[in-house]
Amino acid sequence: MLYWAAVFFVIAIVAAVFGFGGIASASASIAQILFVIFAVLFVVALILRMVRK
Image (cartoon, rainbow, N blue to C red; front, top):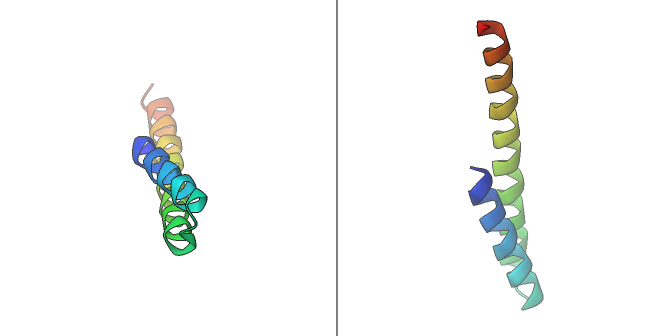
């Protein structure tokens, strides 16, 4: 998931460089959402691992 967030971030940067504001904005939003989901799942996994030990 972190990979896909990075991919959308790169797409947003490339689109912004070429002047496609709408595509850059959409790609950046998708990258932010994916990163937040990744961060939440990572924290949940860490907590579950601590509880099981």
